[in-house]
Length: 278
Image (cartoon, rainbow, N blue to C red; front, side, top):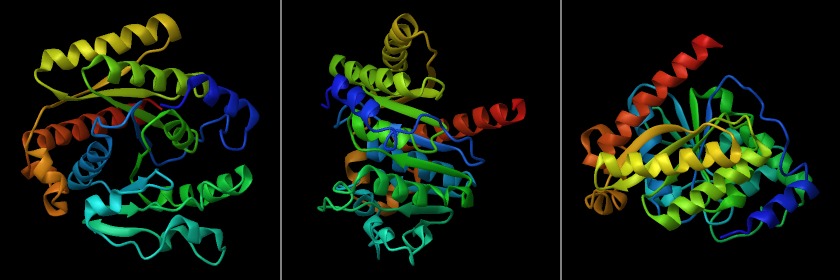
């Protein structure tokens, strides 16, 4: 896992890579992050995006893993271009977007190349601004960040309106989830955060895991955390993950997929309430 102190030092050295403010655009941009790998983050991001699309939202799913992108594999699509192509000004970010299903679109990432990673901070920020420039064409954007602190923070710092922290009800996952919350809060203290507890054996297990994170965030950071919900342990998701057609049909899928559909409805309700208050 990326060392927290190293990430904080990098933020201070590189203000271009980690912008201080969060632009308040019209389109909600939700970053799905986790403190560690292996908690089902990418499957969760796809399931959440598919559920929102099925509910009538025009959704852009963004692969935030800059050199190990795999959402195009999960979704069974072949991107014609990769973000590296956007270094050429004659191309538009819209040229990279791949239709996946009705109202669901994918902005893929490179896989097996470090071209984007080798960019300097100014060029990388310019590239990310070009990508985020098309967010307004969608009702909502879901960004699947790479596992770990650095990637989630980088994604959250660019046009994010909310961070969804995905964790599991086990000590190591909760510890790493809190590390992510702490680092993002240190740089973006006003960014709203939701917690989703994945692979729970009971509703009570999800509540207990959330309560631990909520109590730690309140005591040590002085900030609230919202609980979006829990996803049940579902062995059938192993088969779903290898079948793109089933993966993008959450309402008619497994118990876990139906739970993601409920979370999507809950999110849209909260978003509508927030918008009306604003």
